[in-house]
Image (cartoon, rainbow, N blue to C red; front, side):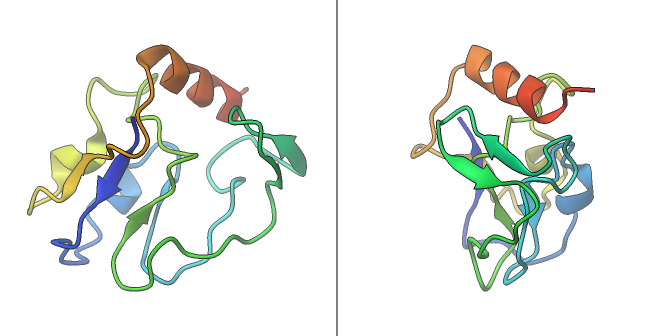
Length: 116
């Protein structure tokens, strides 16, 4: 399951540098699948979606920090717990019920993004 940042976010930015997948972005910022990963050029995501990893994507939120669900692995393969949730001073980084994934799926996603 991916993590989501709720509307309680105070935009402190504590979470962004902690993400090992570069899945967290400041509100209104474009993002790329290639950011902080080994993905490059045209790729087929584990979800089956075909994308250009280097192409800018629309922000998920215009007002608060956001997490890209396709890049979030809940820090599996890196840490024992989601680092965004561990450092958030207002506890607004919570499990995203709309993106439920097994540990096996999260680890496969992590391996896919970080091949090196």
